[in-house]
Every structure is written in structure tokens, then in C-alpha cells.
Image (cartoon, rainbow, N blue to C red):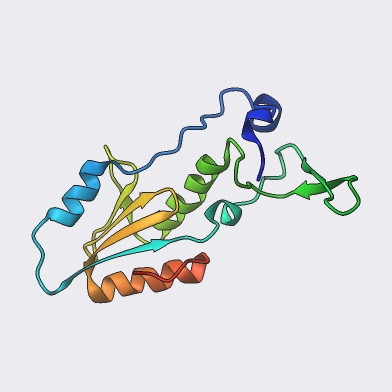
Length: 161
């Protein structure tokens, strides 16, 4: 875990980097869960395990980063090359969003215009709501199963519910 408050944000991410990542609002979740359902509709959720560590790696044009860790046995400082975002880093949530959202779009999902964390698949009539690494899925059971299988092939996930 990185202590994000100690990062030199301008040196690492550049001036003007937008650290704000989007998360679904309660209204979107209520709409998905409280809309009429019949026996053909399935609702499920899944947590993407250690999502920030699965985000896209830093690009070749980005500064090289290192982590400094005190070895608990020897008491000496050890240095490690950092290839991608880790927990605690100020940019990790945004970098995760920049990994997940394009992948969803590549699967045929269309992002919401006013709710950027709500995605809809027009052919499958499948709704996916994202809240960082937690996803809520609503649609026909076979389509929801397709999504969970496809997601778990791309990202390491905890067991879908």
C-alpha cells in the first residue's frame, strides 16, 4: 500500500491529472433493484479481486516509479520497481476506471450519458452498474451468466453472487 498523501502528484501524473473517479449513485442502484421483475430477470453482483492491481500498467511515456519498503527482518530499506497502480496511490481509482470502462465498452456495453458508471448492452438488454470494483448486473439469467463468465475470464474476481 502506498501512502498517497506523500506522492509527488505532479511529477508522477502530470499537472492537471483528474483524480476523481466515477461511482454509481444510489438512484441508479434503486432503479435497477426496484424496477418490476419477473422470473426471467436475474440480479447478481461480483467483486473484482484486488482490482487496482489489475489495472493497466503504466505507459512507456510515464515516469518510472519505485517503492521503498523497510525489510522487517534486516531493518534495511529495499527498493522495488512499480509497474502499475497499487492501493493507496492517488491515481489508482482513476486508472482502474480507465481499465474497466473501455473493456465494458469493448463487450458491447454503452455507458450512460448522465450516470457514467451505468452501462447497458442493447442487444442483450443487460444492465451493469459499477462502484469501483463492485458490479451489479441485471438482465436475463443467461445474459447475466455470459457477462459474469466473460468478466471473470478477463479479471480475477471473487465468486459472483
